[in-house]
Image (cartoon, rainbow, N blue to C red; front, side, top):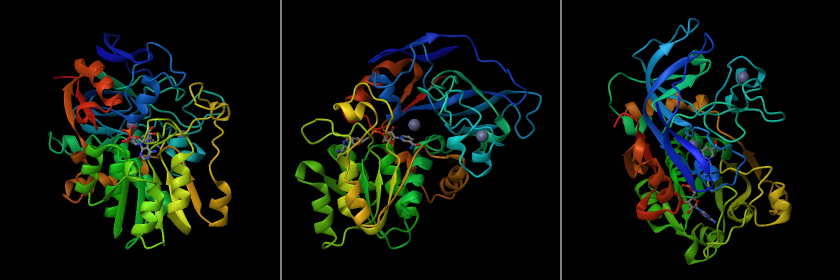
Length: 380
Ligand SMILES: NC(=O)c1ccc[n+]([C@@H]2O[C@H](COP(=O)([O-])OP(=O)(O)OC[C@H]3O[C@@H](n4cnc5c(N)ncnc54)[C@H](O)[C@@H]3O)[C@@H](O)[C@H]2O)c1
Ligand SMILES: [Zn+2]
Ligand SMILES: [Zn+2]
């Protein structure tokens, strides 16, 4: 089959690789209909992870069940499914408590709980930027979708970015009537803004430096805040008459840039502490890593990010972090899509055949030509 493989920093290629097979009786093979490129893939693309050359990328996958192992009872060939990016066993302590993003069984790397498809240090699983994908513990992991091809562009956000945005809002504790500050207007930040609205937020601010992304934020009823216009925390304090936002969401991650393009991993955390009111909640879904050889400062190479923890304590704020347990939210978000209440597909900027992945990675990485979210179709 054809698959997108990592070749080294700033290089991916579409290559012929062996078809995946049923290995365990709990496996399924999915014929991938749509697979997305994610901001998280860029951490690998830019050489900022330990991902090995030859890894098949892609953790945002959906498709049609092609084949199931003997022990799979809930799914049959022909079923249309979304595949959460978490590879979870369903029976360990964390899985049974709903924390599929911290499964204790699926990642063999010592000291790392939680696994994913096609990702650095997230286990040996191949990604789905390919014609077929092997899904372990298929009965537990797969999410059933309605037959046909309706809502494909909306459903393709269910494997990661829509639940992840919702997780940010959940960890921040967004309630009806709240004012919410979302940092980052990439796909995750935009869908965090959408999620905040779905949870009844009265006002949402969306902070970024890319005008095309801020324009998209307005389509999700968020007030755009451009960091080029000055300190965004001050802009939010002014707009809330000095009160600050009730909740904040971090959807940028450790590669946060200032308006001149210099990297500051602590910058967005500081802005959140400054712009969220005392006792408010902050949900961090932007990725931070314990090892980053490419970091700008020595401490950051060891994951030590010096943000204003003293102020966070003084303000009595609380902070949630980590990878999203997709399964906790994806069923309900699917039904909001079906009922026409949620329209996450508004973020999709480009729809391309899998063979065009290398150019798409390059343009998405440089944020060129309005590349906000690329979805790939292996069969196209
Ligand atoms: N926790 C999870 O489960 C999970 C899942 C998916 C993605 N992520 C992470 O979420 C983050 C966002 O993902 P994405 O796909 O939207 O990525 P993206 O790279 O498309 O978006 C990041 C956005 O942040 C903006 N930005 C950069 N510096 C900024 C600053 N100082 N202030 C405000 N905005 C700034 C960029 O212009 C960009 O629009 C990434 O770190 C990604 O790895 C986490
Ligand atoms: Zn993703
Ligand atoms: Zn588990």
